[in-house]
Length: 251
Image 1 (cartoon, helix red, strand yellow):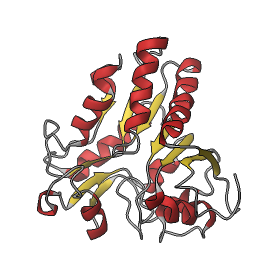
Image 2 (cartoon, helix red, strand yellow):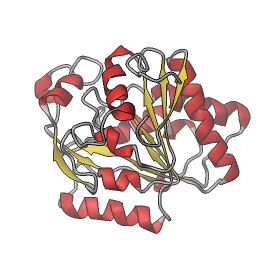
Image 3 (cartoon, one colour):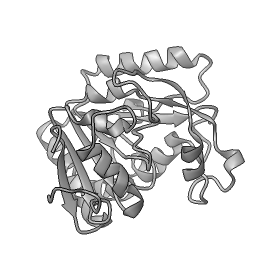
Image 4 (cartoon, helix red, strand yellow):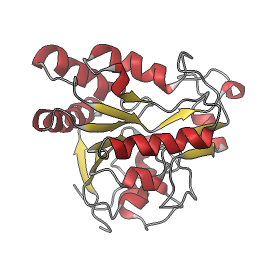
């Protein structure tokens, strides 16, 4: 297999969530003041629920943790029910002991998007870099909102969303109407993501199978942004059987 990506195949989505939460729990128990990167979307919801359970039932603490989120819709205030700040509050932050001032989500209403993105990069450096970043993957292989064609050294920036991404976010789970989906987002760059010391990418369901196969076993190419993680020294894909269906090599 090209590259260093390790693939862990779980029986189902719940297994993916337990495995991913276990990776985070192991880090936080060994380094309570860890810096973690987080993702949004439907795939990590179960992982966040499992982290909340570990906090509630097994006393896993996030009190000293700093977090950075991959992206935010441009034009949405953090109080908007489709903003990623709202998502994180709803699914994780409100259920654990993380300090609100230690959670960094890009401001979708910033007066100057370029300076907002620059400040995000600076905050990551000031925190000592990201220890572990959780990622999802789009059907076209995008990570964060780095669409196909994004450079391997791209930094946090304002990006335009592709029609396929807009359509994927307007299927009723998120926005009811494609016209409501923002056309731009603030997104951590691929270069920004690659600087994390450890990466964990989650994927579940048959719609992600082609993207997982291209990312893990295809060529290292901006045509599939997730494939640009192949030379990372510590990158694991945690997937269910359906998302692993396109892989040629057994795992």
